[in-house]
Image 1 (tube, rainbow, N blue to C red):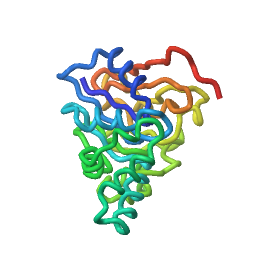
Image 2 (spheres, helix red, strand yellow):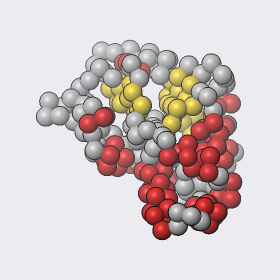
Image 3 (cartoon, helix red, strand yellow):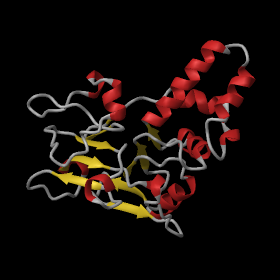
Image 4 (cartoon, one colour):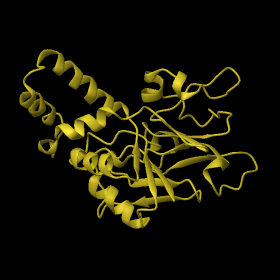
Length: 233
C-alpha cells in the first residue's frame, strides 16, 4: 500500500504509533510531503528514520528549506570549521539536535521539492493553476509557490488535471475547524483510490495537538493516531 502524510514536525513517537496502526510493512511505501522538522522534540530522530528507510520517499517543506538556507549561509563563512558548523546546525533543533550528523544533512540536502507518481503529485503547500484551472507542472512552478502557497488549500480551488495533488503546510482546522484530512473527490467518483480525488489536504495540526494522519492512495481511506493524551492550547 502507498500512504501519504505531511507536517509531522518532529513528532517521531506519534508517527511510529501511526505506522503501527496501519501495520506498515516492507511492502508498503510512505510519501512525506515535507515539514518533518521543527516544533516537536524529535526532529532529528524522525529525519534519521525517514531518510534511511528504503520505503520512505520525502520532499522538502518550508521548514527543511529554511534549515538548508541557514546551513548554506553558515558554510559561506565557516567552510573549514566543519565541527563548529555541525554544532551550530545541531543547535537549530530543539530536543534531539545533538543527534544530527553530516550524513543526515547531506541526505536532507538531496531531497526534491516534489514527487510525481502516475496518479498523484506530492508538494508541500500547493501548485499554481493556469487560467483554465489546470495545474502548472511542478517542474515549472516557482519554489516559493510549492513551499509556501496559501491559496491552494481553499475549498473553492479545484484544479483540473488527471493527477491528484497531495499537500500540507497549513492545518486543515483553518479550513474546516477540525483536525482531519480533507480529500476533495471528483464529481461522480466513488473515492476508492487516489485517482478519484483532485486534491488532498494532509496537515492535521500534529504540532498543535492534533493527530498524525495519513491517506492511503490505494484504498481512499484516511488513518489517524492520537496521543495518549491531547494537548490543549
